[in-house]
Length: 465
Image (cartoon, rainbow, N blue to C red):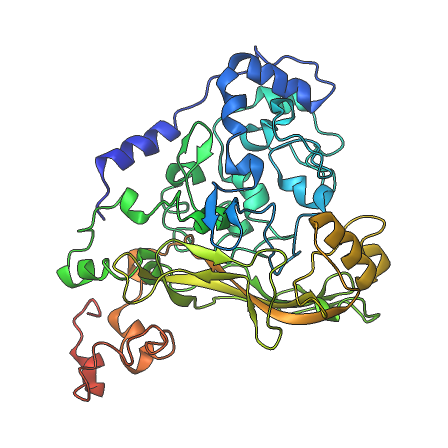
């Protein structure tokens, strides 16, 4: 394994112990905002910097859209096929916001007083957010203990939201779940084998964290890659190094995701509201809930492989759909003809969610709250409230359509001895993993027309090449 000198410097710098803050944060603190005020008293620039970040705004940088002109895209205005949308559901969704009090559309994103320093920097392990408190700390949190413990973020800080996004461990990200708090080397060679923290790869400048989720993919920016640490001659064999031009490292080095815990792969909102027993599957995971509908969970999932140049186009609230076919909530950019595109692995989340039967637009429902669907089980009422909140028209007709959404797979990197071999993708065995025709090749590229011999497997060397 070859790692660049710059990568080592960043790794060790990130692991230097933080200064003891106990003498500066003695308290008492009656509100969490008082902790923030004390923090900003020394770290003056941090407040200004954070207000410009994706983590704070839940929006990426401005991009030009041919239909609507300039637009910013992110969690704040996207639709997914989990809990669907933030608008009108703020107190529940914003329990994972790095701020305090985002309970409705009036939240002031220009006020640094509501920045939550503790959610990223607490090292006591005692700090928690209220699940329905619009980002406020949970009852009983000792603010002094949390404040005096602050240091560099660890997997525990990041995982509190990113491992449990969507309502539980492994729900959204097939490659991030609670097993990643203390992974084995086999599960993740970096975090388990080298005890790396999230910030070792997701480096930060002025509180802007590198790494592309959906808002960044829409703008095709803020990416980090394996090449940030490894050079392009990382393999001892030239043939493998040549693959780097067209194959993402993760394709071979993450042979399957959800290897320790299952991940949710199907969410059917049309089944919600039925008075039937709640059910669990063989993994002990919920597969039916009256509040949320029917689910399917999978483990050791082979990724879907797509050409990807780093960018993606997203369904925008209010766009007309064709309910006769699955609605693509995001469409990955890239093709076999693009030099910058590589074959990369994804989790494809599928589900069924509400749309306006007359206007044919996806519905933003009000789920949370006393008048939300989880209390009333009335889709028409939930849709009317949510669509008003989103500034969209609603005809009064609620129907359901299937949707699909692609989520990048970048974590759970297996040790090199567990990486894919040539026959994992090529030959008869490879047919179970890669659809070469769908990728634009017509057929397996090593077949050389009809000359391919089934005895290829017996011609491999000791390394499977």
